[in-house]
Amino acid sequence: MSDLDFTRPAQSDVYNANVARLFFHANGKPRSVAAGATLFAENSAGKVMYFLANGEVALTRSGKPLDVIKTGEVFGEMSVLTGEPRSATATARTAGEVIELDARAFSGAIQKIPEFALMLLAILIRRLRLALAMQMLGKDQSARTIDHVPTSGAVFDAALLRQLASSFPGRPPVFQPKNAVIMREGEAGIFMYVVLDGAVRVTVKDTVVEVVRPGGVFGEMALVDQSPRAATASAAMDSNLLSINRNDFLKLIKTSPAFGSSLLRSLASRLRNSGRK
Image (cartoon, rainbow, N blue to C red; front, side):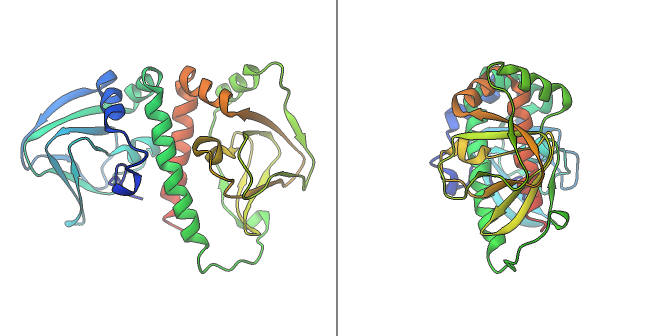
């Protein structure tokens, strides 16, 4: 996936430029740019994301035009979230102004304007659902084993995992024996889950698409956009899970910037990786 489609027309019913503007103003730094100036180059480190306050910015890859970013749009966020190199070059088509936000300031801004994190989560999830649907088209639908599918990395580090586990003292981890079905494709999403130990197998139409191991999460997509479950999840071995309902989730987004940042980073990485399979 590229750094160009955060605010594409397909996302217009989700994206709110006023929320984005408030978010970037909270901790960002405005900068004037001259026509022809390069804001970032393809394959460079992605340290800053941008809100285009006015003007136009062209995105190119290998010298070929990709898209034009217009006033009120955000760009460059994918590399900042994933830590991967830029996938495009951004050049100012006209003189204008951007608001820059680096990775460190991003976490602080989430706490001030949590609505932006929710909006970005919803957009990333929509794009992931589309990518997943495209992946399933024309694929061999025969079942694959746990040893032959992608394994999700830990979304939450050890410190945040301990914090989450202690956030709900009246709700102990849920034990799921091997092969127990935890959620089913098409159901309403009431909880997201954090794997504390064990492993969870995620399947779409009987095809294993991912294995979630300790520190990983699943079920968050339906919790954010309140759409039916996109996949079925079952315990690949005896597992203990932390369940988080929507009210818990919204509270964590507002009170724990690390929680929101970790989820965004995970979804952005999954989205980028989906384009490489």
